[in-house]
Amino acid sequence: MIVVVGLPAYTDAPDGERCAGGLAVDVAVAAGRRGATVELVGKVGEDGAGDAVVVALGRMGVGHAALLRDPVRPTPVLTVSAGSGTTGSGIAERDAESSAEAPEIDADVAPVARLLPDDAALRPTLEAADVELGLRYLAAAGVIVVADLLSEPALTAAVDAAAFATARLVLLIPEGAAVPVLPAEATVLEAPIDDDGSFGRLVGTFAAALDAGSEPGAAFNEAVRSAGWEPSEN
Image (cartoon, rainbow, N blue to C red):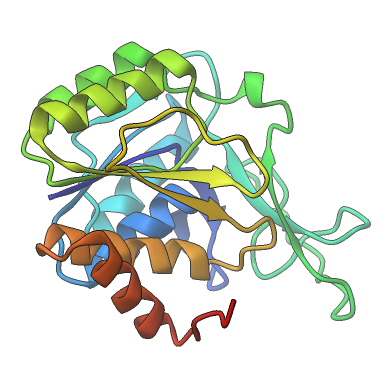
């Protein structure tokens, strides 16, 4: 079993169907498509958008038994915006219950993913107790992927849970971020700033190969081949 630790967000799919998004969801869905059993340890708001995320995760085959609800902070809304602040690709920069239509993005302007509220302090967060509880409930994990930046105590809880379960630990960090001190056998992957979703799919494929028994090097090579990437010459 693969457990992904991270915060999902509410999105509007291009066809108007409510769904879940974000890096943690991308990883979980990609791993599930490779045949792995996947659970998500995360948190959403106690609101309509959070309800939609739960339904979407179930529809996509991602377990959410350890998905917590925050009674104070709202579920983040993932938007795609151009430089002027307009939204497109069917993802509306609006409250999850709004029915207003979003204008289209200028085709010449590269869209930028954005989480609302902008202030991370206003969005749900995973505390050490949340991570410890979720991973204790999912103690049969063979691979644990930490897909969001966690506080030091919360990351320590994930590291301890991986050690207890003898699970492979994979940590995703933003491009240019400092690498925390981790066990030597952990894998750290740097997420590109301008990711279009392919990084999450790569990590999901990598995690599924680890879960199937491959060693990290072979699993990563398999993920790269599956993504159609070519190895660097340097």
